Amino acid sequence: MWERLKNLGVIAAASAMTLGVASGAAIAAGPDAESANVTMFGADSAFILPNGNMYVSGSLSDPRGGVAGNDMDGSLAFGAGFGNPIDAVGVQVDVNITGTDPLGDSGGLGLKLGRAVSLQPNHVVFASVGASNLAPWGDAKQGDTRWNVTLSGLTQLEGPTLIHPLMWTVGYGSDAVLVTPGSSSTEEGFFAGVGIGVTKYLGVAISGTENQLNAGIGVKVPGVDGLNVSLGVNDITDNMERKQNILSVSYSINNVFGG
Image (tube, rainbow, N blue to C red; front, side, top):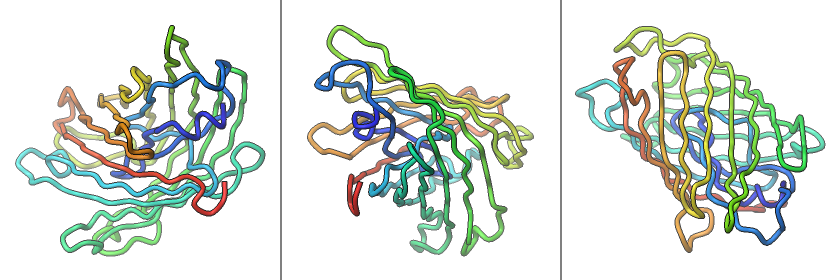
């Protein structure tokens, strides 16, 4: 599954950034079979960028912080993958820019360590430990370092003409759960999500915590390798009074400095 999954677009949440590229090991179907576009929205994934791969992404959220009446907010991110998560430990380094007016006045670094823990013919499982808001600058200095541990798997459903990848993720994080409706206060807790590739270019996903449900779609742009768009809603039922629309665009490049 590894070679095929390196070419799948996988949405992996990291701060406001939720786009990325996937990893894996050799899927049971034939090497020429086409795969649908699997995606994840609103929950982190243990899959990391393969060695030598890079991405850049931008996101718009409306309203800012999910607080009704706020204006839209933007963020940027870029990152790269290092190491071998199959035989050793892979590392993904991210730069998250949360200040866009003026550009770059606030942000921090992210770091994720990941490794395959099970490589079966039709199911791979990865584990990761991640931290964000490291070495913050600007307004981001007011926030604490965030961390999570995540376990994610990827399998497939074989249709008559297309492979439909199915991804699941579960984890525990320092700021995963909103505490009070209408408030930005968070606490440690569990999160989970599942996503499936529907067509060659479209995937759908749902995720949530104990009190919040998120849902989104991911689209691979036809004719432009590495370009992906996601659109989703956090707190879709408004249970925590933090309903928020998220639009993200990312572009990934393989084997920039070796793969």
